[in-house]
Image (tube, rainbow, N blue to C red):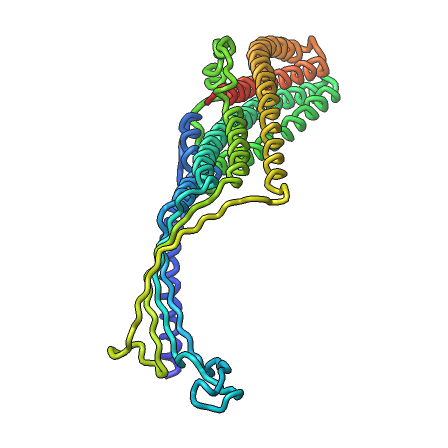
Length: 458
């Protein structure tokens, strides 16, 4: 019997193990299916961000909330219907003292009399309608301005996200190209180091020459590892901007040089700049409108307000709780009311609030003038920076070609023993510096063009 139990136990364990072996690949397959794979050009990345970026989503929700706020303001002047009910249990009725002679008692004496019933119930429905209120009229206008503010803010947010995506996309390409260049330089240095070590072993070169190349190789190795880390970080930053999960796979289809050439358009600097089309200027106009409406609202508080209400209701009275029975008697009532409120004197508090609103309006107008001048200056700076980045790109490209020729000649001379390792290393350092300057110049062109377009977009 014990032997059979052991066999059964072993069989269960084997079966459980086989089940795990079967389920493990399935679980891995599920995990792989959960990971998304994306392949995007820069334009596709921008469009994806404008749909899935979390900041963009929230700005869209702000616009939806502003629509609801606008309707809330409008509804305040439309008919309002409310219903109410009240039940009261007078377990001890309030008593009044009246002369006893009213009931045949002795003159000069008083008796206690209780008025009412032990149970009372009231149910009513009321219709309220605002007839005139200056603050309401201003409030409706303010609701539209409030909505326009969030619409414009969303457009501004979209432009900022677009610029951030362009910058992040370019930074990823920069890191990836840097990795490729460092790997190429590393392979060349490893070959040079091997040749230098062989020459030293054969007595054809000094030991310091091989050591110098080894130091340069170590520096390139360090830069290569750093570029690989930066590639992962910049790619994750781009994923966050795109509204993706960090575990998702993302491939960039555009090349750095391709994007740089596509952004070489000096015609954009020749077009006129209209401050009124700038998003920030539109927000400044909206701010001034808000302050104007605030002033109108304070002034409108000096106007009378007129409202009306219509009420229908029923009362029930009983010494016993019989309100849900048919024999209970209900007494109906109704009335129409009109309310007029006329402000007369507020000890100059209303005047003080109006003066404060005037001051805020003047400040908004001053801020708008200051904003206009600053935007003109920003455009000049962005235009100059873009033109400079294009010039730097051309310079860096020519510098790279020259550095490549110099390094190639020094490499031939070094291999033939004509030049020293120090001269060769200096040529290599110049080449590495020119390579990085060239990569950075392409990114600068892309970023400067994005900054200029952000200012001129509306």
